[in-house]
Amino acid sequence: MSAPIISLESLTNTTSSGQLLTTAKSGGCASSSCGSSSRPTDMDWATWEKIKDHPCFSEEAHHYFARMHVAVAPACNIQCNYCNRKYDCANESRPGVVSEKLTPGQALRKVIAVANEVPQLSVLGIAGPGDACYDWKKTRATFERVAREIPDIKLCISTNGLALPEHVDELAELNISHVTITINMVDPAVGEKIYPWIFYGHRRYTGMEAAKILHQRQMLGLEMLSKRGILTKINSVMIPGVNDQHLIEVNKWVKERGAFLHNVMPLISDPAHGTWFGQTGQRGPNALELKTLQDRLEGGAKLMRHCRQCRADAVGLLGTDRGQEFTLDQIPLEPGYDSGKRHAYREVVSRIRDDHLAAKNQATTTLASVSVRGSLHVAVATKGGGRINEHFGHAKEFQVYEASQTGIKFVGHRKVEPYCHGGWGEDTALAGIIAALEGINIVLCAKIGDCPQKQLMEAGIRATETFGYDYIETAISALYAAEYGLDLSKATA
Image (tube, rainbow, N blue to C red; front, top):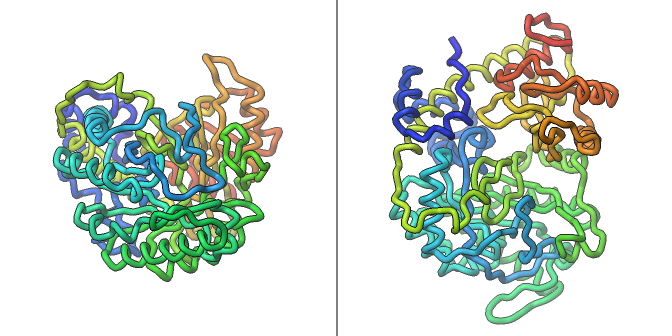
């Protein structure tokens, strides 16, 4: 029998760790290890232990666990044509953006405050707003302080790789288990179109010479991390007409050197951001162009498709940034860490994940039983927990899945402006949502009004609330079966 539906939103709003623990035990599971059965069949136990609660390194984990970035490393040693670290908007989700820079002491204070209030927190990362390896003293001091207070939190950094080889030994010493390197090229002729200059060995380099040095250092750093058993994720910014086709070669290179994941992200290019690409009119890829490239990379380095291109001060689940709730003026001056809420939350999630795994397995069985071959592209409004639990009008993004006889695959997300504002629907927002859902067959949500449902239908997109609060895979398998001829009682027209 499936476990009762538990709202993760209600869990995270619970103030008592005792209430969370009671919920966990009520399902007959009080062991924090019982969720480990959700390990992918093609992954060893050691790797699974490293990623099972890391939302960036595991697509499955991102439904349940949160990350936090602390902006302690403002200095940078390269200039990218897509980056401007000075621009800040509280609603802007973009690497390099922060509302306040922190000292290591302020970072510790903030991490403790967040850990007390956000039980999903499992990972602390330093992603700038400059480069975590170049501004190393601040990075190291922050990790040392946090590890002493919250020893079970995972530590990770994001870097451009130029200063990385100098610090691999220290990364291992600090038990930093995950590193993200931004690698946009393996051909310096491509690189000089992306990087105006680098600062290395107390000198500034430009052009082809700069790109060659950066490439060599990135490859060396990746190889050193792989030898140490530190998991690496490679971020690559897809820039149409500059490196989009070249990223196929990048994928080959990083796979050969042991990268665990390759994350191809769309260029964010807006003149308001003040970047060189934004000012010169360089466009970013649309959703279908990004997916087409990602599909071409299948079979190479394992792809990450659930990235949200987080701010350098992001807090919360991927796709939900709570950073503005934890600015320094809103948190205690000397917060004391209480581990109870985080540990109790993990007990609850362990049981939920086992139930979710059973639902996924049943969905796979259903898909395999359909005799007609075909595919279905489904957009889901969700707040997390792997369920269809968001109102259409409140969604800030839709998670996109592709279903076929071989299974259900997460293939990306589409960011949108919420349609509903205080009970009223905004027509321009709805038009934007419809445009963002290009190529989608069906939208799944917890609730949807008649007007948006009708306009979606006129655009050739079906929308239904029939499966509200079901697991995503359960709903998609039923839809797929109905679409291709298998009669299931829950299927919708």
